[in-house]
Image 1 (cartoon, helix red, strand yellow):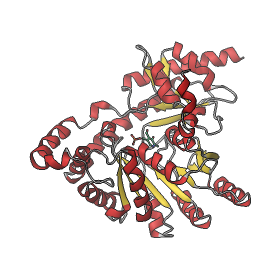
Image 2 (cartoon, rainbow, N blue to C red; image 1 turned 60 degrees about the vertical axis):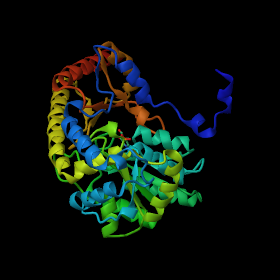
Image 3 (cartoon, rainbow, N blue to C red; image 1 turned 90 degrees about the vertical axis):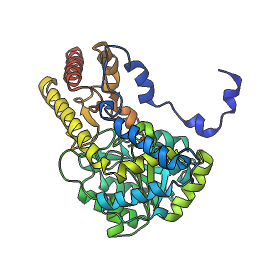
Image 4 (cartoon, rainbow, N blue to C red; image 1 turned 60 degrees about the horizontal axis):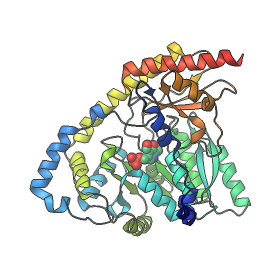
Length: 409
Ligand SMILES: Cc1ncc(COP(=O)(O)O)c(C=O)c1O
């Protein structure tokens, strides 16, 4: 190890490499069918729209597009997003409720910076989004895991944990939720549980982070209201912080997202962002504003939903066809992932090497558990591989599972 490593500060010392990003280095091997990534299907990026939009922007607003912008985001972007929130979510917001971010990962970093002191309890779903765990850990969060059920976080256990933390005089900072087609499990928080979460947020005065990158990719069923809207309609706690991104509905390469919260929180975020990157790309904000204003968002999202539904159906059908008895999986109504549970003590961690020998890859479920549990689980991505590869990949995965079952007998 080089000498200066000993001088690095606490936050990067605490930051562990992302298991997924490390896995991707192995799984990108030729011949491997990978369900490990979380990438949108590049076939459907709106290439022509972006080309046209950039041309138009350069002709009319080039000076804004290529210049630094305000730290909290371009007014045009915020205005379009205010309209979007009204149109799609029934949420009333003002530009002061919004800050534009360099996608949602930066938003999570800002949440961590704003709220977490070392050893602060932070409540998370078990499993939860790995990139959230990674960033909150870097600020020293002490995770309190709450079981995730098929209809979202266990609100009973959440209340028990809040009561327990209060009794310990612990100053819990927030509950982090991915309520729609959760990454990694594909699970959605039910309407009843959403109401309960809002009640708990008021009763225990706890901030709720609603991180929802997949919400617009619903290809089946009816969407429950956003937590932010429920809070607006009923309790008005100001405890809700909602995070949006264009990564899954438009293109992750745009690196564009927004935070919706009380203006005082937004102002604090703005000050933080001044030191992070001054501002998010002006050009990309203008492209996204055009995407919303032109109505292309609505056209485009239908294509994305149709494609992902086909891929999800293909994956579920393949699981039903090839997997042996005892293996179960979620059937998400949207998003990019589904979640597989192996029977009993069988370890998806240990099986990973066997799966690679069969030329198929997944992400081990334990990597999404703040306490390292969930060894018998795995996350499968269905948005990126082709339907043909999904069928073949699940067949290979089932071979690995069956071989392990035989070996364990
Ligand atoms: C739940 C969740 N939050 C945040 C992110 C980060 O996405 P981005 O920074 O591209 O918006 C992801 C990415 O997969 C995610 O699944």
